[in-house]
Image (cartoon, rainbow, N blue to C red):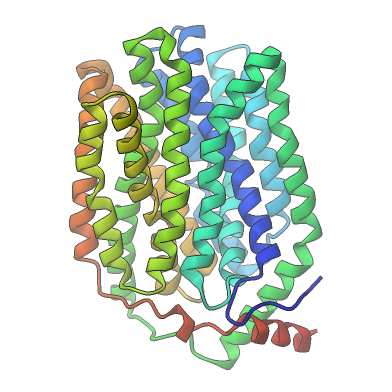
Amino acid sequence: MEKALKPEGPDRVGLGALAFGHFCVDMQTSALAVLTPLLYVTYNLDYAAAAVIITVNSLASSVVQPLFGMLSDRKSLRVFLPIGCLIASTGIVLVTFAPSYWMVLLVVLFSGLGSASFHPEGTRNANYVSGSKKATGLSVFFVGGNLGFAVGPLLITMLFALFGKAGAFGMLVPAAISSLVLWRLLPVYAAAARVRDSQKGNRSTGPTLSRGRVAYSLSLLISIISLRSMVQTGLITFIPLYFVSLNSNNHDYAAFLLTVFSLSGAAGTLVGGRLGDRFERRIILAVTVAVATPVLLVFMNSTGFVQVLALAIAGATLISASSLTVVMAQEILPHRVGLASGLTLGLAFGAGGLGTTGLGVFADNFGLSGTMLVLVFLPLPVVILSLILPSGKPGPGKTSLPVEQDLELARNSK
């Protein structure tokens, strides 16, 4: 299944399959966000209870990720690539037919665990098949998730309009295809893992940091990701609630706004990944997030095209940082890539989910307008923390072998 590739480039088939799996997993989360206003009405919830639905899904898909990450560093869990994708994708079907609010929470917990098992393995294997362009390769993987967030609201809205609740079963079709492809490509990812193991024994992957330096850098990075994730998850959760509260006919417009936000994030992630392979990553991180507050202010105080454009810019800048932070964590822990992925995608995003519940309580007490205003200014602490991160140059190419050499090592290791 191996094929010739461009020097120092990623394994496009393997990386593309992982990105498509990421698309299918994250599509469910954004679709759930669109369904939240319907669940809000169906079960007569308050804003805090509605936010808990998203929070349970976020926590289930994130808090246990470090555990999966640590296990994957010790023993291969590649089988969770297809299985996790399929489990995560069944959630949107089950939540549609849940008979009670508590069953909704149980279903989103189940779906979240599927996501938790997929993400560390997906990120770890994306790192392995990315060749020397780690930030670029990880950005492709994250674009899959961004596109899933973008397509989810539109797809679930269209399926419900055409088929009613039964339309939710349509969400399983791409997940089934993805799971089959990932299952077929497991030998490719196994070969990439053998290459990684051989590189550990044959050469250094960069300077070794002291434990204190590692703890300091990771704590700053996890704080950055937590706050950034809180803004992203908060916008995804409260934009539909906010616009439906203004006008009950705004449901489709809210779904459109979430799609714009996520599609723009996909484009921004690709650009951010390329910039991260060329320039100092903490500066790229600080500059992109700094743009978010002014454009979100414009979004909140405008209508029509200007409002959509402002949200698009906010999505591109906020979400573009996602792949950079994961690569930075993997470079801090070069021999524990699974753990680094689980920490950054798991605990940090879980903290962001908990923050969203806090925002729900805030909304019940001070209104949705005040909550949206908090989200507007929350990116500012991220900028400050990014600037005090230890300086790091890009140069992943200096610590990774070209893919052609990777494949040759894989062949020789058989």
